[in-house]
Amino acid sequence: MKATTENRVIINQEKRAAKPFLKKETVLSIVILVVLLGLWELLSRIGVFHELILPAPSLVAVATWELLTSSFFYIHFGVTMYETIAGFLIGGFLAIILGIVVSSNAMLYKVLNPFIVVFQAVPKIALAPIFVTWFGFGPSAKVVMAVAICFFPTFVNTVVGLKSVDEESRLLFQSMVAKKKDVFFKLSLPTAMPNIFAGLKSSLTFALIGAIVGEFVGANEGMGLLLDTFNFQLEMAKVYALIVILSVVGLLLYLIIEWLDRKLIFWGDHDNII
Amino acid sequence: MKKITAMIMLLALLVLSACGNSDTKEVTGTNDEKVKLLLAAEGTAMYYAYIARDLGFFEEEGIDVELLPGKGGSYVVQQVGAETVDLGIIAVNSVLPAWDKGIDIKMVYQVNVTNLFDFMVPEDSKVTDIKQLKGKVIGVTDLGSGEVPMVRSILTSAGLNPDQDVNIRAIGADGTSILTAFEKGEIDAFSGGAHDLISLYGKGFKSRSLVPEEYKSIPSTGIIANGKIMKDNPEVVEKITRAVAKATDYAINDPDAAYEVMKKAVPEQYTDEKLGRLFLDTFIGLTKPLDPDKGYGYIYEDSWQRLIDQFSEGDDPVVKNEINLDEYLDSSLLEKANDF
Image (cartoon, rainbow over all chains, first blue to last red; front, side, top):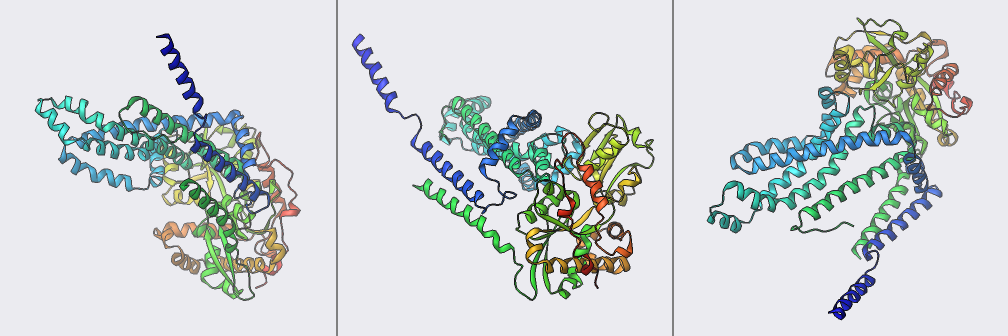
């Protein structure tokens, strides 16, 4: 018994030793990133890229550090994050509820779906001044903008997910005289959840875009305002630094949803992006 | 393998796009030189550029000018400074950050000689003096836009601290937003450019200006050219400024004819003819020379110094370094620009 346990320990240790710290694909991605950054730096230094159009990555790195160590940055960052997360939660919730309602009835689907599609087709930037007029000049208008932009991916995925329920499984539930709510909570919703989470991943990044777009129209605080201010001041390194920070934030938000997806929806297919 | 191929293609695209900008600079040849003129705003605010194009004033000078409306003065300054375009017309405060950084951009022609920005209250407001704005809310289009340094300077001159005694709030440039803000009592005063305010006046809004006399002659719009074209091909700059001077003269002397030209050039800005005419008359008024003997485009150095002083005030001013105006104001072409 002892010998078997010892063997198992040895085997596990060997397996751990055999696993590299980083996957081969990750290493390759990092190498390519380093090469691209190096090339960008070289082209900037020899004057191919003008610093007013594309500042060198070293300048962007310094500007990023300056921003992250400044006190004013976190006020603006906090405002944008609040607008993003509030917009995402409200937009995501509305999208799931409306998706469920619309999928539950063929007539409702045919009546409501065209309106939803038309709303999606409207360029949201055109609605930004209207939202400011309706909801005022504070964060509310930006939250509404985030809701408007992030709503559709989750809505579509909820509808698609609920419609993808396997017919044989549905018949099986019917043969067992299952109640409608049992069919929904034990069959339809679990089937749809992987799709819903896929929609939520897109929605979260769209909510960030919506908050920034809202801030461009009129804001006293937020990352969108900082972008506008630095652009006016021709502080291009800081503009790109903000873009880098927003990209990283967008990626982190995406990874959070992906982690939740893996933990909660363990029956779905999961492809990690990292 | 696929990842590597995709990355190499992306890299090639990046390099090609950076090198590809050279074909935007087409100031070559001897006859009908092609010139790109970047405008900070489209249409009536820069009416002289459209009149010069549509009445053939650029053509008479032997230049083929393409007008490129941009997205604000900062964008124009960025492109002119980076030499992707050689010439632009901007609201002048946009060039100050570039001068602060020592970027070689010259101001060669002052288009508007009076302040484009107003700082006003509704006509029936109880506020009659700047000091009465203490504790109140002042709306601006954007916290980074050109009227903000003027507002801060006016408040400071009146003994108010712009960061503590008032609340400066960005409410956008949309006329409906501004009107709603006044109606809901969210702002007590507003500052913006003539192009932002005209739509308010078109809707019947009546205001009272709080701008002190000494702020009324601050320069507001001008033609910029980068150091490279001023050195290599100043004749093109001279031709552009002369065509603009001719167009300004034409509009001042015959605003009705100018109106007809602009209606065809930017019809979308004249769907409300009354508002369109008000807009045009306002901007023609702004381009009338203060002293006709000095001609069009005259650059008033003392008013430029006042502008720089405004932008140098505060804890985090836009202008942080000393600016030697002799390096950036260039009146050398003005005599020839007025030779028509």
